[in-house]
Length: 478
Image (tube, rainbow, N blue to C red):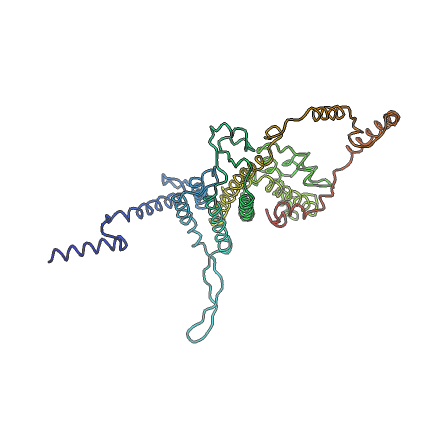
């Protein structure tokens, strides 16, 4: 009887340890996962406390930079490159949710004191100071979590689609088709011969618009956080003493000229490679920092002071900010500039570090998903409107049609420039006015060479804001 009671106690103890589960399973089976999570959390926060210096010698990075690197590395290991539009595996999704929650939990303890009212038992109301999560974290962390969930939900939504698939790299039919860039290692999407159905195309377009909104929102938060970070002294010490030296003579003349058009300026620049785009961005950002310091040191005895008026400096800065804004939205995939890297490296604000890194990875993930959606839409465009040489089912032209085409070709090759433009001058008029036309064309070329660029677009600042999504003034964005 005593033995039976002891056995019942042991069974009830095993059930309580297993959360009330069946006694048929081993007691440790359900609890194996819990110690592993604790061990992983201990390792993660030990690295954060040590500043990634595992020797314990105190030579590690700051807590802000350690958290920034941890969030970035976690996203890279979980998401990878996102080669296909497909749901995340459940285990990777659970790992992402668990580890990002650990890292973001730090923001729950970044607080500020705010006034509040407390009513005592006798009815007296008195004002006290209470702690509350810092305002920027209180606003942006929930927003970023929502954007994060929207991206994961977008990938999950492609689970049930069956109209497009991805060809293997060895598929001979897919070589050279559906590829808009040189990323040969990515699988190529394939669609039905007649393209996607209208319902599927509309659905994919709606997903693209949703991800595009996520990308814009994350980019806005990231730019705002970077703008609030302090510029390190090491970066300022590396700058030249004037904007001309930073920009170069040609770029400086374009920005400080009386007539300024950002679009004309960018078309005149060599932006053929990522390195050249980044170099231009670095030069312009450095000049903005120089001009701001000159305006602040206007009434002080400083090496940064300048004889140029504050109004002109503000005008030059606004023009430079407009160029930076257009570059950021026209080339969203370029790496971070020298100023951004310097700010992140020397930043000591843990809240800013978490917001910057979390918004940056969401922006990058959204950009990648957008690229994969555009690959599918591009494959659909090739299927519905194939190039002339790949069109199928074309009927063989008859003899009369071939003769007509040859005659048309002969007429085309014998047409002069005036005939092509439809001016309808006869041969006699052409001969009589040939010399005068050449002289007038030469004069027009000289006038066009000396004519300043068209500045009509420079007065339409609203056009640039509408083109890039309407995030406000350029100064507010950076």
